[in-house]
Image 1 (cartoon, rainbow, N blue to C red):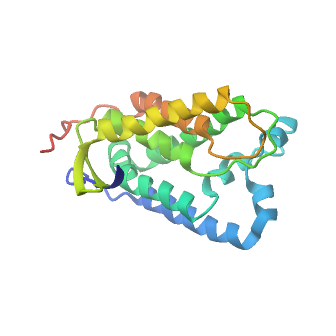
Image 2: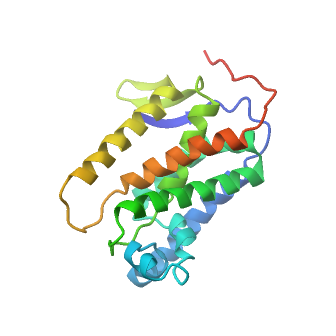
Length: 219
């Protein structure tokens, strides 16, 4: 199932933070392309380097969130942020959503760091922060319907199924990556995805407040 959209009929505010984050990620990616490997090494998060000198390397906790390994990595993250971010921002408000996004990104980075303290592979991407957005969405809009592209065409599937399957895949892949004997060759940071999702789910209880609007029933 490949998600391509959702129902925004209940959205009340213009998602300026979501669109700004997408624009910033795209812009930063073009800068990254121009800077090459030297730029990546300097601004990506490198676990071993951070552990050695956390203060000097602290800025990479944030810069790494806006870097990506390629066009597919960027496109996938921005598609998910575009589909799910606007609704979460609508419920939280602009400022709270921005704080939420950044905190989820940090939580994702530290979750990955806990299992890769000695890694010298650059960690980069918005995946952890976006995973936090998914965690919030599934809690705030469990009955929402997501438009997904399948072999038979476009169909609507409950968000609980779409995001739930995504999380189960990350969970099993993350456990597998811990159990497997691997070399430090890079790959997908599954623990960052899990950490970001769990952080987003937990933070939603603190940030959602009381919304007078009922959860929409989509048919």
